[in-house]
Length: 204
Ligand code: FE
Image (cartoon, rainbow, N blue to C red; front, side, top):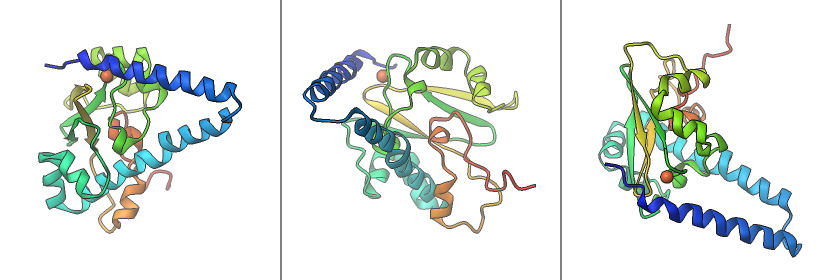
């Protein structure tokens, strides 16, 4: 059912970006360190924080959650984050009995609008190959050991359809504000390689 025919445009884009970057660096127009800082910002800060706010809203507002599960693109757009990459978005809800994990087995399709730039491991061959064949093994390497009765669902992203995992709301967060909840939503929890952070972790 997945159609990867359109993925080649991504590597084409990557090639163009790379050529452009080396040209700019060669001409002394940009500083590679400054570029790295920009990439880091989009990979780790700006991008995933948008997704985290979407998740926190879904945890706090049942009507928004329903909208998000039914029509993710529209629900995300309603918060002002553009999801218009010309692709549809689907939100996958984790429950005590179902754990979702996302991958692009062929390249690196990723919900940029809400998660920013994909981490290097997401684009790596071992993750792309093994997330499909041995998701439990991969999750274990991320430190996530799932009980045998939990069903693991792997979703292969395409250029047209991208996924965000809606992680389970951690226990002990009943009184949390949306902002406090968003702090618990890690990038990896929206890819499905970990759970949302436990606010009580570290307390002992
Ligand atoms: Fe892809």
